[in-house]
View 1 (tube, rainbow, N blue to C red):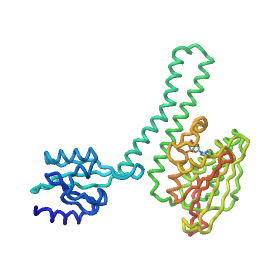
View 2 (cartoon, protein in one colour; view 1 turned 30 degrees about the vertical axis):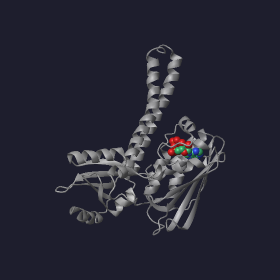
View 3 (cartoon, rainbow, N blue to C red; view 1 turned 90 degrees about the vertical axis):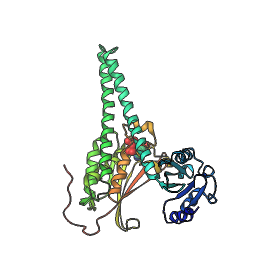
View 4 (cartoon, protein in one colour; view 1 turned 180 degrees about the vertical axis):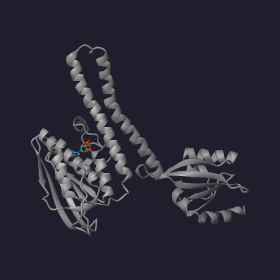
Length: 358
Ligand code: ADP
């Protein structure tokens, strides 16, 4: 057939994996990208023995029968390294060739899956306190209606559950705000020493309540950087709050700083702030996933302490915005150390400073 050599030339010029199938159901043309995807030796074979996946095979059969363009999914590779393709099928007018082109949509498919997982997680997190609230409302309206002691106790629990929902919604809003701004570099000059002092002042009552001593070891010298002061306050608030919560009573939380004149990754001056507690610590298997939304190393303890599982995810996005990074080291039983590395302002070590809102 005369069309086939020209078709092979056209396919060779296309970047997407592309395959031609004739009405005798054989593969009559394919480019190098398609050969990489489907394996050598596909040429001349029946399409079913090459494509194999039922959704795509069915789409090809339908297209050969009714010649209507359509799309189908094709998944290649192993479980953890899967690539998902959207395959477009279209008969070329005036020939008896059906053309299949494979577009890699793995990232889109993953983003869709992440969105679905996120919605499922949020619903699950909200449902638990909500179910509890509904149960108590029912009890208060019925069996416990005239029991003053039970009423007081239940109202206390209900306030706690409502507080949990409120914290969750607050953290979700923070997360969506910091994600939206992640690509906008901050431009205010901020003194990180002020931010750290402010963090410790704010959290001192919580530390006292938990019998924890906050030990600042970062000195008074200004640490100037380009940043968003409120977001940086949130980073250190989340880290110190976790250290108080998970560090356990009677312990201390040490906050130290060290300036590196030449950080290799940031190619310039950087500061490392370490927040260290001496509590239960974290099993190393959890460390790589700690900043994922809703990931909890110790789910029971986190919930008992009122955690939302979003604090470190918020920290990660804020640090990304500031070109910073975080390292976590921990041995179970010996506490945890969260180190934040941030680029310092290179050009002007002195100058007007953005003040935190009171
Ligand atoms: P949460 O609201 O649950 O504290 P985070 O995102 O702040 O959520 O932290 C994620 C998880 O990391 C926590 O659930 C906890 O298991 C673990 N974690 C965080 N900080 C510490 C710490 N200082 N010591 C031990 N575990 C910690």
